Image 1 (tube, rainbow, N blue to C red):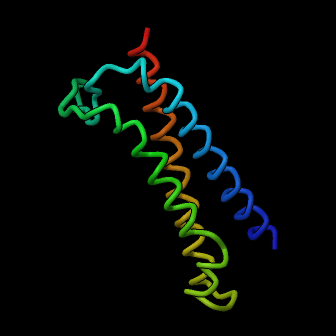
Image 2 (cartoon, helix red, strand yellow):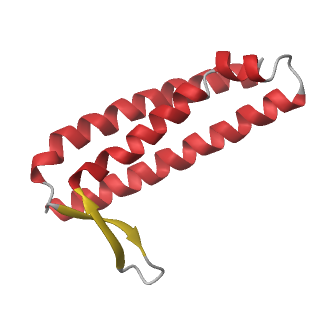
Length: 115
């Protein structure tokens, strides 16, 4: 039961983080340069550039993962309280944390470009 409560909070936090990232993207959109870095090499140099709309890529991915990983969807796909259901939810939590981390990193990176 504790895991289910934790899982519900991860979903809520992911959704809230998505809304915040969309809001920040909209707020800073006019200040961003026409091309922004989207891929970095091991040396820290930019390998690939994209348009300003790329700012909305990670919030969109996070929103899709959040909608897919809602408890109702996972419980229908893996009925019962078995290990497969729990493992699937743990993997989805990890994916959400990873996407949140990358989104936050890119936001701070792009905010440095605005200065």
